[in-house]
Image (tube, rainbow, N blue to C red; front, side, top):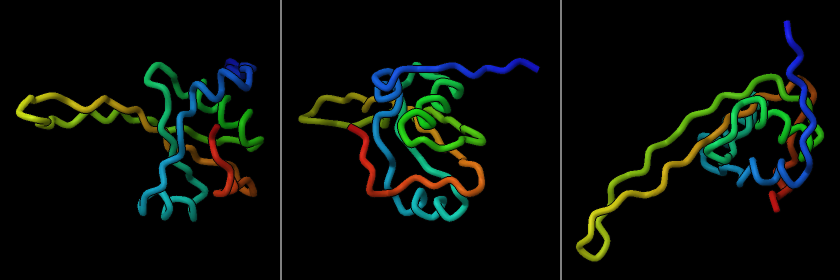
Length: 105
């Protein structure tokens, strides 16, 4: 089994993790030690895991990602699409938590 531990800089970590998601569903997931973030579309699970560990100094157990396709919208008679976004649900090891008052710069 390979060890895919990679060190990333704090600047790269902030480029990967855009912002936390604060919805009712994501708040309910926090009781299971899971946190949701909007992440860069070009990042993979290993990058997201490293970024969370560098920014919040916690141990990540698992990362699930999903790409949400932009919805079609009409604006001033023109039809277009919102941007696609990528979200990550990060599961932390037992005993690790992310303080909800911390903000991404």
